Amino acid sequence: MPLKPVSHQDNLEGQRSVIRWRYQQTFTPYAHTFRRLLQTHHGEWAVREGIIVQLQDPWGRMGWGEIAPLPWFGSETLEQALAFCRQLSNPVPVDSILVIPDHLPCCQFGWGSAWESLTRSVRNIPQGFRHCGLLPAGRAALQIWPSLWQQGYRTFKWKIGVGDGEQDCLAALLEALPPTARLRLDANGGLTLAEAEAWLNLNDQRIEYLEQPLPTHRLSEMMGLARQFKIPLALDESVATVAQLQDCLAQGWPGIVILKPSIAGYPWKLRQLCQTQPLDIVVSSVFETAVGRQACLNLAQEIANPHRAQGFGVDLYLS
Ligand SMILES: [Mg+2]
Image (cartoon, rainbow, N blue to C red; front, side):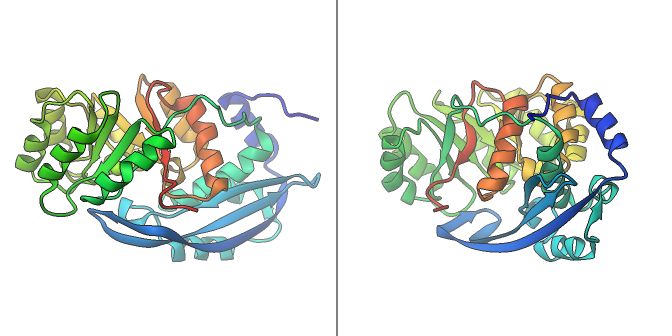
């Protein structure tokens, strides 16, 4: 029998009413090598490691989730996530799933989305989302963008703060890109204030936004840049978890936020916060498998700005 849609309040009621339930659980680590090395200001990344988790309810129904850590964004490590999973009893009482501590946000998301998939009606992935195609850093972007364009991508992301000569490379990229293309610049917090200003002084309407120019602790300077320049700013590393997003909003962040649900914590907490604030949200990948991606896109359907491309165009890196 299909489950009826439930509101957040219903969800909380549900949490209370099923508190005595126990679920059979399994967790399976995986390691997937990227098709090409991913280069960002945080360094080089070759292998995505994570954990697929599964819950089976008393009626035999299965729910899946994915734990996909990103420690350089402040999440737990794979080892910490595995240590948490290993200490869970089997069967596991539902309250062990609902009270995972906040320093394990990827475990909260993985086990939380597995539990939600059993207790909350899940909509299908919308066909209408456009995605942003992630280009390789540096001059390789000039060779790669046409194939992504042919695949249908019209919005691209290019990592900056990685190497030398990037402004010249950007000029060549903008020269080559069609007038209808959109380009996002992602610094991963790796710029100085002067460098950020130089990028923001560029005058090309195809630049959709500059993402996380400065490190997370320099929010007030990024707020100053957001007020000062025409190119919009987006926060990413600064809003990695629900608590960080709350903090940035409390300080008056006026711009776009890039949310990576896989590292943000419990999906219902992110949903509740985003649905009670007028936010301009792009939902983005942490290179999850199809399991985590589906959970993220289901959430994106409820919280993302549908007029922007979402950040799951990572075909270049995942097979
Ligand atoms: Mg980013």
